[in-house]
Length: 228
Image (cartoon, rainbow, N blue to C red; front, side, top):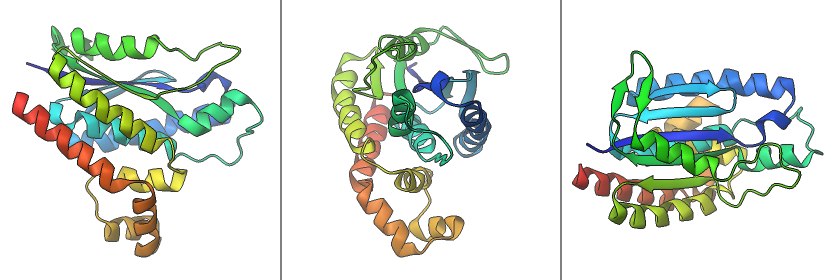
């Protein structure tokens, strides 16, 4: 059976102010709750800046990765000082995420045990390009994919690279709308929840490239469902 694990590493977390780190940690609890309730995702914060998500329906995995990315990018914190280059990188990129798909030799969610190929692959992808404690750091990519199925990897990697390019151009407000769209909400419901006009939500949706994102997510779900 092919399992899916998404690992995330907050960009330049240690360079953020204590207030900003505490704010993010509080918000992560909301994210974990949202994903658990809506998609039965098992998620945890391993340390302040590293997150792990086990996705029981592998076909949901790309959607989960994009949900986490858009959620973190939407967390605007105006009080943060942006003179520091590391902080600017955090505000620009938010979080790096890797999706690994493969076997899990040990899986006991009640005890929090995840052990096997899928989690190793997602973790290794992030560790290969750490941003901690570097004098000069650049973030070329923030989304990565690895699979034990080489044919799947070849096709999905293209989608992930293209999605990365789309998401790096979104604003915080657009990312917030993307998060709700990825949760399956329509523009009318999002407008009511955020207290915005439907035309504003539609504008954010269009400018964020939602039509392309939706196509990519649907293609991933179709491909993985066929292989399951």
